[in-house]
Amino acid sequence: MTAGSLDFIVPLFVPAHRPERFGKAAAAEPDAVILDLEDAVPLDAKAQARDALRTDFTSLPILVRINAAGTPWHADDLAVVARLRPAAVLLPKAERPETLAAVATHLGLDVTILALVETALGLAHARALAAHPAVCRLAFGSVDFCADLGCAHVREALLSARSELVLASRLAGLPAPLDGVTTRIDAPDEAEDDARYAAALGFGGKLAIHPRQIAPIHAGFRPSPEDIRWAERVIASGDGAAAVDGAMVDEPVRVRARSILARARRGSAPPDA
Image (cartoon, rainbow, N blue to C red):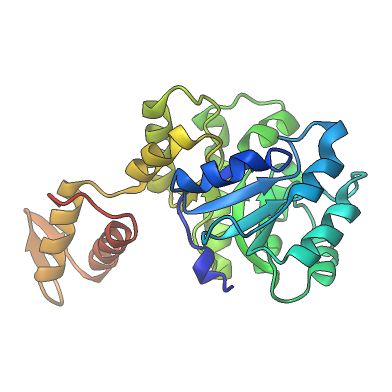
């Protein structure tokens, strides 16, 4: 599976030790399912979670979040995933290219790595991580990042980190990165607003931890009908400099307009758009 085919908007986490939830997660219609061997699994259920891994419950891309390098479960996770051959591995605490190289060696060429940046060291090496040939995409582990830095999980504290992940992805030619989770699962408006904010910064998707978050996140990444109509007018203005809605339009503006229309097609824009 190529990196381009992993350019999804909403992947949904499901605890890997709860196989009865796998099919339900897929039925909630995320863009991908992440079977989680890490944070969602109690320490005494790590082996059980590995034994429960499977990919035959859906045609959606299946990712597996393994435990980080240096943990007691990392090597066993790699061995199981190497046999399972999921679409990609979500590597937590991605910090150094050398770790990526070691993981890639275990997995082989046809399983790529989605590097989860969750620490100050990971952010410092974000451009090197993004440039590694085994990496298909970056993702932001914002909650762990705040724990590492001792900062609040608020937009102001995380703006520079988010901007660096977007820039690192662009420089490496990767799909736009995935933003971190919205921790409240009973606040769909909050998930949608967080997704809209992430899209405005240049993120291409957002991690979901509950099926209730899928539709709001999609809505947050979907351009508004007004944005789509504006983009269509810009494209219709032709080449060179022109005026649209009283503003000057040239090629950089048309690039943004084409991006909006591409997002609308990708995100199933509303029919009134």
